[in-house]
Image (cartoon, rainbow, N blue to C red; front, top):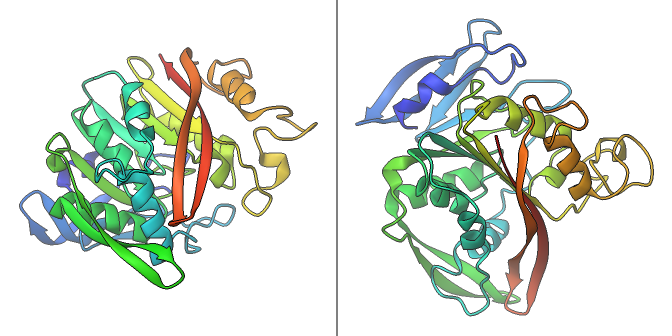
Length: 313
């Protein structure tokens, strides 16, 4: 973990109170903290730094992120590496989704946050348009993979062809992705371990329908984003599932309840301040859709229409 992050970190278990964490360093390489811990004097929790990765999962009863993420298998890592980087190694089936999302962001000074970063592509994209970019995800395997790519700048991995047959692919990061301006941490997008008003740019791509408490995630984005001179890129297919979140917590996809109707309409209402949840409100700059694809094997792809809102304040 790059040491510049320490000043921005707070205890996720103590939220909504923001308690600063005290960093103890056991091993360091230049500006990179390899091993150590982050301690909260208020709740007495310790958060480890292992192999350069800060693990900042909250210890809570209502949102227990200590439960291992399902996104830990080698097959899913392979699928997401392909989805994030296939256009870079020029796979004929790749989409241009990440370039399209990136084009929606303006260049800005300050720090960017990629919430639910998975294996890191959009974090790298955000680093091109800001002073520094942080990716956060609750999957340790995803963050470890993203950070290995950040350090080594290339990665060879296997993709399924059919049955037990696989082929090798190599990701080589382009020179426009500056590894010195990127960091990845393990954490919960519903309890972001960052102090308020920290980020000039925040993204939440294909995430809101993958967390148990979608509204809490949006409130956390609102908390950590600057109150002015900030931008927010939201995008999601709204594939609501009761396996992930109770129906009463969905932000769309139901005929009644607190947020009936279509998810994109409810997100618009929330961000624009019509419900009073977002203070200060966001101004809508652009809406649309971007097609995104994930590869399961050579003959099986999932094509996803992700509805986006680009907002600023």
